Image 1 (tube, helix red, strand yellow):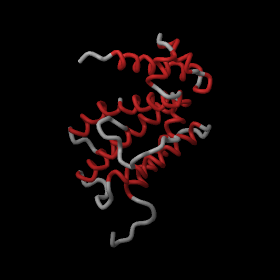
Image 2 (spheres, rainbow, N blue to C red):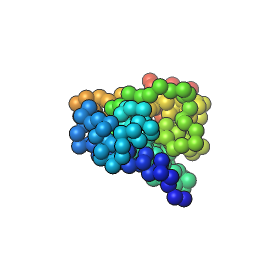
Image 3 (cartoon, rainbow, N blue to C red):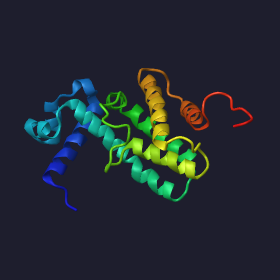
Image 4 (tube, rainbow, N blue to C red):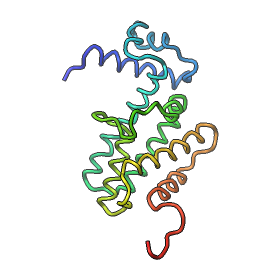
Length: 194
């Protein structure tokens, strides 16, 4: 299927913005600069995106969507959900640490209209939720909680971990392992009756 002119312009803007943010940092990039790099008019950029923050969020969404085709076939093949979840988080952490200026904007969040992942489009939230659901079917994760709620709790902690790393705390992959263990096994000592 051929891309529409709007789709091509949108992709050019995201490519230009991602390169500019990586090279100059978010705060040093203007909408005019993005337009010039994309070879488009300022008006075209503003017709497709309301602000530089919107562009940064779209760049983050596009990066998160790239995890879908990498992990979903592994899910379908029945790979361990614990390994898939670890790989998803470590892959996201890697991207965030390589793209600190736009990662921080994406991790601080956006105004949510629902606690459910967006319908009809790949999202990191939806991917993590689906991995939790797989882990429940595999008997690896507790099945008495909604996988969406489990994903929200994990992603909230993960976002804080990455934000601390972006602020200068050294990133340690073992922290991801601890975060996963706490979210999968729960907090506190388990009694003999559990």
